[in-house]
Image (cartoon, rainbow, N blue to C red):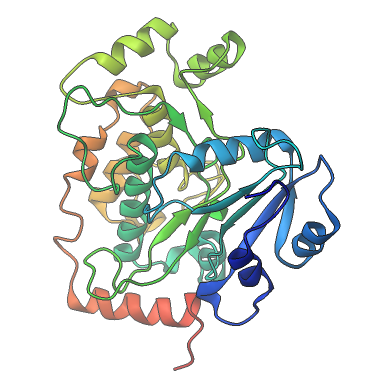
Length: 323
């Protein structure tokens, strides 16, 4: 593909205002300047991003093998004319049409999200973190080979407005009637194998580690595979429910604890509450491993009524179907 040219089939999708499933979106760098044709496309279906953020997004999404379901898909990379190996000037990305988790929670009220729906959200977050750690998997299984090490990639911005609803997958235990959640916006992502001393010191402080050597030792210790990236992502998936970025109803400024009265989070089932608390442990060694999270029987207690309630919520508030 020539530089500064969007593949014709993707250009058609950008210009097509019909089928939602056929659409794509674009994200362009503030510099260098785009060609007039690409600038016109951007104005119709895209946004402008910092050049460094765009590069991080490209690098992060290129790790995906293209079949990942929980991460936004990268369709194409567009570079400036004459710079086939240079930084991107534009990314052509998957269009996810059904809004964000934040929009849903605000539309119906945080406390009105059914517990079974929150359980599905939490499972999607686990799949997301697993896919970030193991790009060659589909987010369900941890490689059994002890020589397969997880990546050190941390998203750094797992927030409810960066989680978007995809489609229901009929017949799927996980995504029927609950739609799949997809993670977007990798502009802040970082690989902890490449951090400099300043960045490393900030991470050590945030996670209350003493030294980077401690982090390396923890990553190699024990039967489960750990990495600083995994530990950060596990903490962040629980922070989707932090009072400053609330998914769960809690009094302002209060921490979620095992003793928090159920009335403070009536839609949060006790086992999910306990998982969130564990994921927020200051010491990463005390957080659950990906092996533990992926092995849980997430839907053991979900009833037929739960599914009917979820379907009604999904149809009305995510797919905007009229009853």
